[in-house]
Image (tube, rainbow, N blue to C red; front, side, top):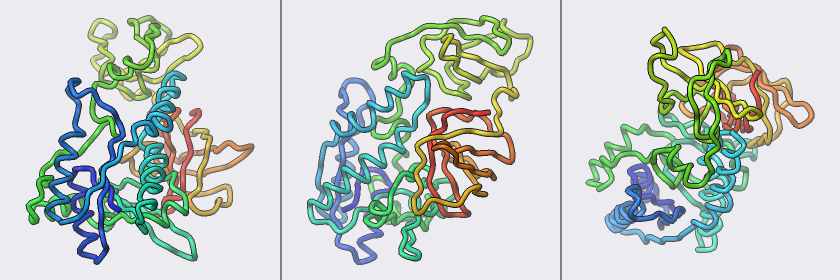
Length: 352
């Protein structure tokens, strides 16, 4: 059972599975009840495109609405984290709770042996364990978002695109006259799409105005609520000239929850960089490694893996990086790698 989203990746994944001899059916998931008049509704168009691909490939398309599960298991947590001034990554939780749990269970109930998605990652079985490996296209590798998957989920999943590049995917789609061949990649929050982020959050979270200050505590202007900003953010601060003699851009360096202050700095300021982080809720894909663990880690998607040493004490992960990292953000995931093998990850708590 292939998750067919109406995008180019899952379209080509379906074709590849058929060519590999699998008996394929497809499932279109709706996970967000949109207001069709809000200007961001894409589910209807995506379903139409998915149906056209299914018809072209002569495979059955099932549809399901997981919106209640998405709200309960992903979006509610997303809002709670923002209320605490943290910046969660809903795509990570969405994969764990929706795509590889709700979808997997639904597909198995329909008689499927495995599920497949258009993710750029690889699954390899070695010594009785299933390893999650990076996709061969470095620019599209999505193992970062999949690091919470467990052995059962990996054993039941296929990633047909893991061995090829996005360029190749587009080429295959064009050669097969897929309606999705030139369709823009989806971005933004998992299943919700690309929206003005702060404006979207303000629909669900109350405004809590406070002061925006520089590193010396000098007042600059007011903010609408710490929940609407993230560490390292540049866009949307709307700090014009007159606040400094420097023409360098302003960035969010810290969120002081006790005083409700947003700390901003100019340029590549030292306050944006930290050598170490602590993290909680660690998940290992295979077995727990021996500590101290020398490996590499990413603190955001599409970042090059960074050399580090990982320690574990009293339930807390401590990561010491070889080089100071920019904009380490509480609530985001730190994901660990040994060469091209994704070991697992944890949620960033603090930075030092």
